[in-house]
Image (cartoon, rainbow, N blue to C red; front, side, top):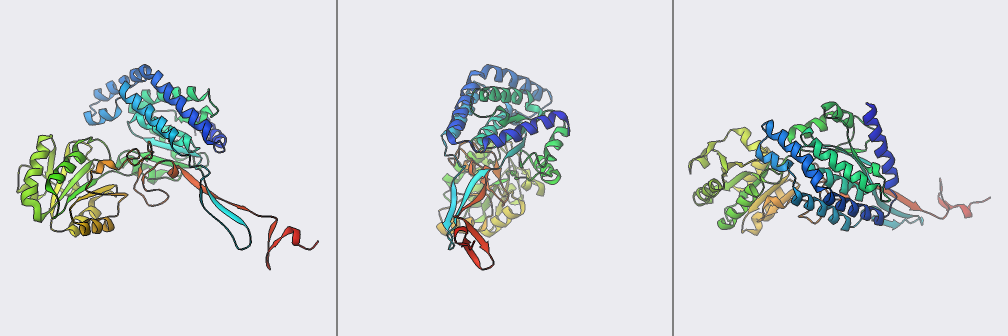
Length: 427
């Protein structure tokens, strides 16, 4: 482990110990100071980001990915506003999840507590740098941030501004740390820092997530690839289905909750598929269709792998299915358990779809684009978990905590005969 990494990891661990017992007020005040500092430093941030964008364009990065990387003053103000919204949210630390008085008189409580030091490994989205730092700070955690090299200049300036802002508050500046280095070795050090880092959260594409899950010795909360489906049922309002499909695919195609696959019930395919192909073509979307979809128009013939794709672009896979059960089977086979939507007027169909689809989020007559911490009212999110342990779906403040049990007695002693009070025990 390099001295540079060890230095920031130890600083984060020390800061986590200082953060854990802090009440809400100093944390909220610190977040508001950070938000103001980001806005004040917008010109410097934009200048650093321009270097990253120029480098990305020079290396042939797609415009969809550059859109995720790019910052301007408007986006920086939005990032700062997200930090202020986190400050306004309830503090989960100290919340009593459950409690009771046991028959022996012990008072038992289960409380939310910070996880400790959270490592975040993520790709070229510098807004994640601030979102993650803010959510971790509010929930009493220190954070080690390892963004992609494509956003290094942006992240370096963002972290420095946040650290300088914290220096004037009651929150330790070491609570926000940037992992040094641009090579994969620095990522490996973070993944192997068991004892210094309490949990890792990867955010990005399938290769990044799989690498962290498979190679890390630190516990991992797996955020998921977004192969999201829109299923148009036999009893769908077809006008509504077109609107939902276009919003889910086109509104922002480079994010994990955009739709990547369209499934259409055979009973409405003759009417709906031609309309859908025309609407998608008008938005510049390339359709990768199965043979049944291809019968209705000009599409790219779909290979099986197309149905597993997270395109993150103006591309979508499409298939015709014979039943709701076939749609569910398709989602189970090819989906990523992120977000899947049904468009239908049938209450029984919607209930069956919700019951059968095992995803982190299921949408009924709504766009997949709503699976998002801010849209759910959580403020900024740390990621969208598609695993089943600890947290699932958009991860807000409560998902960045663990619990501890506290029990309070009056001299309670456990003996072979049962519980006795110390004051009642014979001298």
